[in-house]
Image (cartoon, rainbow, N blue to C red; front, side):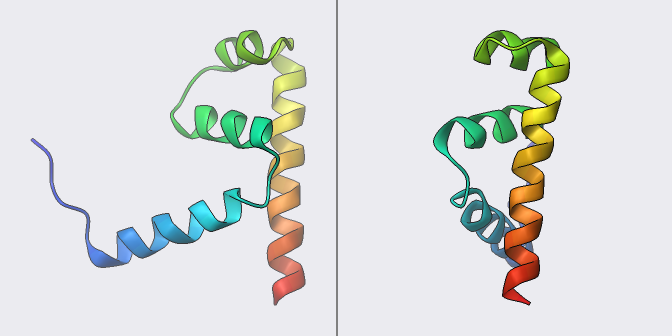
Length: 73
């Protein structure tokens, strides 16, 4: 059974999609794979990394978003 998202949830999704646009395309894919709960091994295989390197790339992507958000406030 699927429920329709609340308007606030739609707004949050749109805001996050805006943030993801700040990242390079490859980093976007990595971030969305992790958001979809892919394990680090699968993500690493997709990008040709060992799992720990995939984690580091994800952390860099998150740091990029955090820095950009901090600069806007």
